[in-house]
Image 1 (cartoon, rainbow, N blue to C red):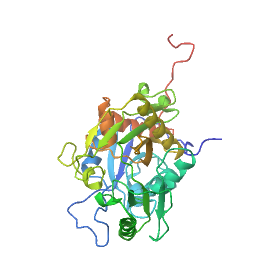
Image 2 (cartoon, rainbow, N blue to C red; image 1 turned 120 degrees about the horizontal axis):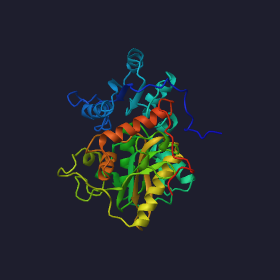
Image 3 (cartoon, rainbow, N blue to C red; image 1 turned 30 degrees about the vertical axis):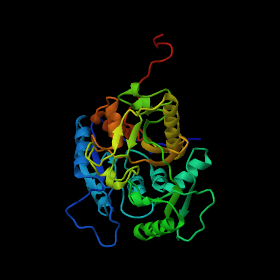
Image 4 (tube, one colour; image 1 turned 135 degrees about the vertical axis):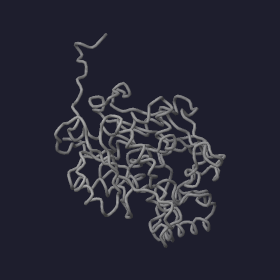
Length: 377
């Protein structure tokens, strides 16, 4: 039986150069924010400069690229452009599984694409559901509870201070200094604010006062067969990026990795310190990388992901969330900073994601690995 998420769609004719459509939702700071949406709506959309950087990286290997907006016109644009494969970084437009919208459309149209498939992208944005899956498979998460109305009884295992955020958003949306609540009154007010402002449940969890890290994962079991850099991968087919520490102690929201702090340029006043590789002992490094890989595998993530982990008051790691569509802005996004820290060029990172995706659709021929008989001793 083929593991779910690893099944390969029908093969495509193999050719050297492809027409690659980069699909994204773009921020337009010149347009006024629509009435009735949260103040940080569209925070996880990309700037056109990121799309341009991805296209330039792909074109270094001879491919043709085109940018397509991930909006209601996308089905018609795909029919017109007829891409060989899509490089997907689209966040989607509305709904509780918006990151799954573009993968679902591409599956329907039988168009190859990069990254995780529909189910994984549908689940990963839902922080509560993700935590339930991890908890049930013995991965460490902080005690948590989802509030859909706001007057539900607080579970006894949840002790103040608590942390409140939207259950189905990314990029620190709905997270600021008021996310930390110290008593029942503050919690109820914040929960109702989240429910009413974001039109979705509020996730309440034990506040974790320790250090915060993010861990990138690249590859899959057969990655070496299709990679241009098989030396990156360990025996299990995965590459663990150097661990990045997010030190928010001097950010605009001290000790809270908020949307406001994330929006700052690296090195800008009020931005967190991004320390990579993180200064941690080998045993903690081993644990963080192990948990990140298990988090990736349990959600059937494919090829690329980034998992956020924070330490509790006793120094134990607790998984926060996984990003199956990690940001790819050069010299800014966490994953790009991790790659840069170990000398991986941005162009090589982007092309690796592209070729891993293409290989699932039969667009890349597997390389011949040395047999045991011919391998050097």
